[in-house]
Length: 144
Image 1 (cartoon, rainbow, N blue to C red):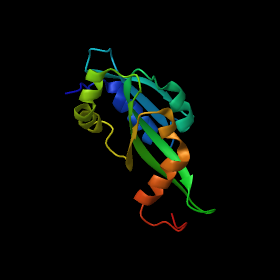
Image 2: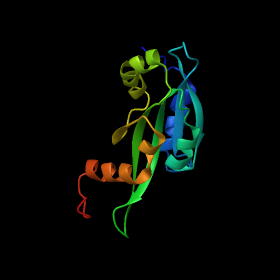
Image 3: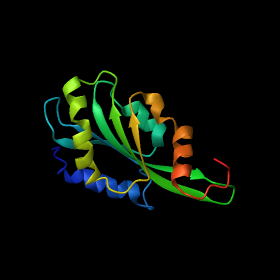
Image 4: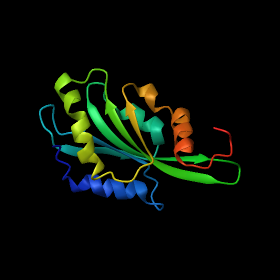
């Protein structure tokens, strides 16, 4: 089991979800290579682009992101995604624990529309994620 007891994780989660906050992502990392304790690493307001720059290719991390997109000229939607990041240089034992630990992370980062498994930073490009969000959202008037 992963230790997700750090209260800063839940505080950041509430901040990302808040309509009154500009914070639109949070990043959670393991305390150390040998630890199963997760801690809040950083937050930001620069969306997926800023988050991609913060990901370490030697680590496994979890992120929670608010993504805003428009279905048409009249409407904007905000959806939330959970990112499970396994960097290309992540150690084998850490990779092996991710699927079990992801369930623990979901007990804290609870509400999201889609889960994105990212192995490369390009997996977090906004356009393909928005296509997935539109499909997950039900009504799509763009034929996507």
